[in-house]
Length: 498
Image 1 (cartoon, rainbow, N blue to C red):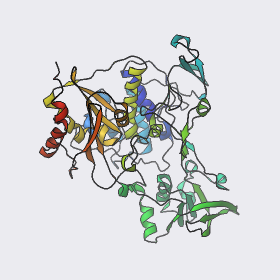
Image 2 (tube, rainbow, N blue to C red):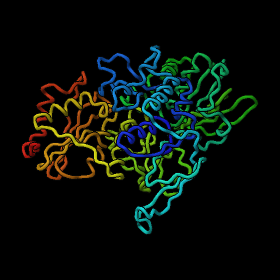
Image 3 (spheres, helix red, strand yellow):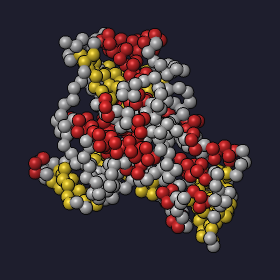
């Protein structure tokens, strides 16, 4: 595995607990990945709430702690709250870095730091029937020599700066090159980009800059309006209000046609949707234009990518859709889109989402690639409805990965009712199989989250939506009645466990 950010650490921990031997390589000198450098204003967007009415070491607390990695042992859960100074429920970047380092140290994750992945080749594997149509191994050439394995996982983040092909943009600083904030005092700053990184910079410059202009072709979306992580987060909304109230910030929906160096400053030529050009002078221009996935030579091996971020196309279990045996972890797993119901993506781009992907991936690799069977607990028919409603009310995987991860229950006439655990919802829907039920939480971008039930009976799949609840509790009599009515046709024909 390549990478020692949160995704790599979570996968390594989970693989170790399943008894899967593996190596972790990292070009960094210590754990933490991108959180060793960013965000530039040193405060996370993801919260860890200290007081929730839930014990911090219980699984249910994960719903409120978006930053700690997941552990089986009670002593290693909820690492972040103890490291935060209490001034904010958003950890600082150093606190986040310390949390990842602490988790790695306390759980015994072993990483070969300072080991740079340089290239990748594929060779036949005689041990796995190599040859035409046979097994193969991957060979990673690194600064410390070669590593060979039948499966390789890349958790390298979406961390390589991206600049669109705009004339002159290559000469301006990128988000990651941001100078000390006081150097922008009394200056006119033009920010190319209106996503979180652009608004983060604008928020930090509000007390310093004379004027701020943010521009990109697409209108600004706000997370408080989409009711998802899509859009600019509330912490960075102040420049938006400033623009709305004409306080010195200008937000433009326009393409950037050219950035030209003029003396000590710049001229930026833009074009709005009506085709009108507007040229503005600026003392500084900053490209808050996003990042791409640093895949090195993987596309040459056939790894297909898509989109501006060059995310690899993936199966529901985060395997390359075009090169079997290459998997991905961490923020790259947002390349596995899932259902995207109502157009809403997964939360796989953030720690609170992809930490669960990593745990599911570890079990998948253990079972499918290494023959390690993990237990499937049995349930009594009378316990099924209360269990599923409790999961919908408090299961953190369902809350953090809505319409993406689901609790799966097999309803087999011979073996009885078995809990298959948390799995990708898209896999459940597409894979077919015997009688089963999957429950997930969903959002439509307009109202409160609501439970969704997917029932497979006799090979046919049906979808059932339960009512939302203003207090986000789904264990009352009405939800109990609704779920029992949905499950009755299949439960009445399922065998009781022996």
